[in-house]
Image (cartoon, rainbow, N blue to C red; front, top):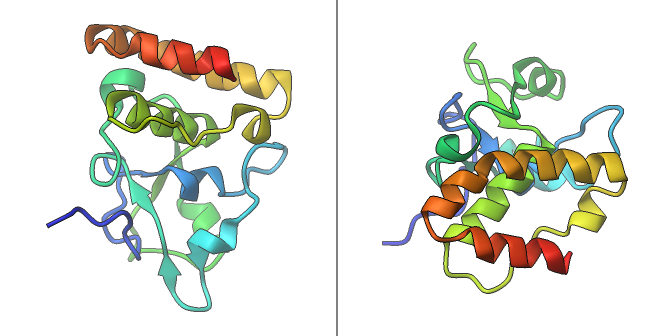
Length: 158
């Protein structure tokens, strides 16, 4: 049986199994021009459905690549938007970590195309640099796994 691509609630969200991928990319970050365009596609309060991908469940566990970099406690921000989970702390990747998680998933997998669009998702030079700094953290692990050249070739194409 195939692993589902999403959870439809926040019950399994934790510091270890934080929200990542497109749900995290589309979570609004005030003061940033990255992400936040399609929040309601992932957090539909009216229907009560949160369509989220979790690290270590739907995505690889990237702790070896990035440690705790880019993990944020979004309990209060989600509560302001009507989402909570019985007093549990809720964690999410920031936009850089979420994109980096997506890139690592692609780099260690068999897919031919990476669906991260750096220029679209990180429009300013400063924001692009933030993503590159995050990816630099993961390069030693990609090198050990024999996947660094794949990611570097993709980066050159961006």
